[in-house]
Image (tube, rainbow, N blue to C red):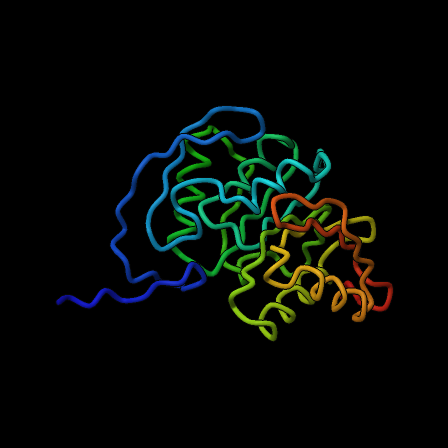
Length: 208
């Protein structure tokens, strides 16, 4: 029996075959067709948590730098770009296949304001007006906390993050951790077993 290597959506180079397919989805109120593939998060549809985030988050800033942290094939980044054509959207992921899919999908939708990059590809002096994320909870708490600390520190003074986390995967404990680490974190929505947290950078953190 052939052994199939295990993939994680946070793998840098997925081991599964890069078999592209087209999937119809609704983003920013528009019915569109996007390209997906195995080896990325939720390749067949917009997952339930992301759908809750997209439905409940406030309109993004019209200009500035907007970050989708853990972009996958791009539902959040593409939505941000459609809603805010005057902004620059940074789709950030460690998964090279996911980044290629975001670039392809931005082309398919005629979006020229999306930059799909690995974390190191984001300019060091960038300060985000908004950050939206369905963060990779399954990387484990130490890695998740380090990632959030780093990216929340890159919000500008008026910037806000909106994070969606499944209740059963620790949404409430994550909110407590954020608060204990000096960030202003509040639950602003709850639906289908998911919490949406609005987070502002703590006053004690630095924008370098």
